Length: 263
Image 1 (spheres, rainbow, N blue to C red):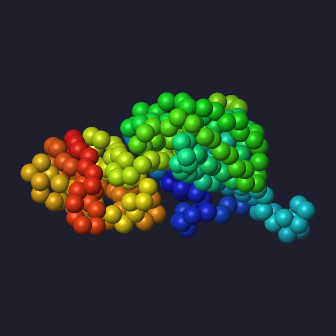
Image 2: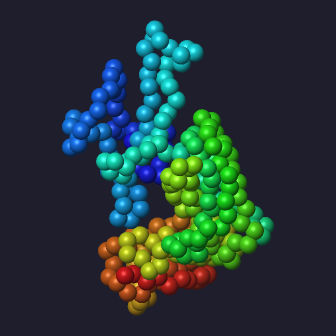
Image 3: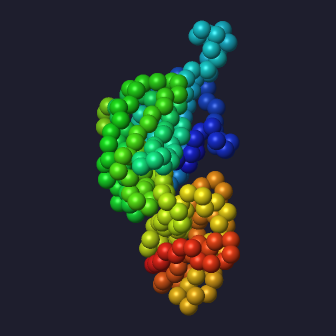
C-alpha cells in the first residue's frame, strides 16, 4: 500500500504482505484477526486506504506459464466501504503550447472505467468541469489520453482529473499547474495556512526568489526549481498577516511580486 496519488512502482512498499489463500470464510463484525492497512490522506479531513493484490499460483498449477495473476487495485475508506479502483493513473502532466494548454495522462490498468472529467481552476481550490474524455473501459496495459484547453487562463491554470467508473465510483487525481508568460504566474493557496506553492512562468528556472514580511524584511530566500515544479514556502512558523513573494533578475532588481496572506 502507498499514499494516495503515489504510484505503486515508485518508492519501495514498506508494508506489503504475503498470505496463503487456501480457503475462505465469512467474518462477522467486529472484525477479528490482523488488519493489513495504512492510514493515508485523501483530501483535507478525509482518509483513504489504498491497496493492491495479486495471486501467486502453485508451480504445478500455472496458467499459461504465468506465476502471478494480474494486479487488482482497491480502496477502503472504512469497514463496509471497499471496492476496486476503476483506474490506476500512471502519469498526469501538462504544458502550454501556442494559445492552448495541453494535458497528457496515462493509465497502467483500468477496470470498468467510464470517463475522465477534466476540471480547471484559477485559484487552485475551486474547480469546475471543463470537458470529458471517454475511458477505455478495461485494460491491463498502458493507455494514453490527451485533452486540449483552447481558452486557458492568462497567467496560470490548475487542472485535475475526476476518474469515474461505470458503477459511479470515482477518484480525483493530483493537481497539475500550467503557467503562461514570464515572471510569477501565481501563488496557491492564497490565503495560506501551511505550505504555499509559487508557480513561475516559462524560462524562469534558476531565478532568485524571496519571501518578505510587511516591514520588507527578507524571511526566506531560494532559487526557482530547474524542473518547472513549484517553489514551496513553509509558512507554518510565521504569524498571520501580509507577506510578499518577490522574483529578482540576475542584477538583483525586482522583476515581479505577488502578495501572500497568511491566515
